[in-house]
Length: 243
Image (cartoon, rainbow, N blue to C red; front, top):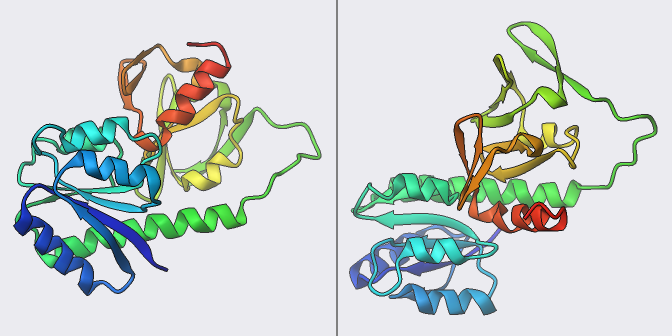
């Protein structure tokens, strides 16, 4: 499996270092490097890129500004000398955040994480087939937690939070942690009621109280809208005449 990537950084030495690291990993294919975000944006409009190593602080147009306007962004690994942008990067759904100077071992860890995500997405696309239920769809799900099977009504779910290999289901009066993947629970959730808005969150659409730029508010919890999911989310709201 090959992964096409680009480097965006206004420091020549940083580009040189990351380029050297990329050459050490056989499945990474460097397409181009840019010393500014504007040229990178123009390139990505014409070329398919799966991974971007992106600096944040650049003149005229920052890495954050680039992330905010990308419609269907590729995987993003931020490379920065400052940790103050980490939370913003998380809100914009980046895969990893590397602090300069970057050791090769840390770089390899980030790339491995990216490759695992891409491999899972490709496998999901290959195996995805429409399912036509032969019986009425249930309005509940059973999940295992604390050695018990809990019956949970879909209408009681506020949002679902991913915690590595576990999912935390947030209900009005309790939270239930269960060993389950997003892929598995998405197959049983009614698509007209639930939507993935971030790599770590699925929300109940009728529980939305307010939308603030790149966040959704549900019972005082601010849930980030990931860059990857932003277009589908707002397209859905417009289609349903909610916006």
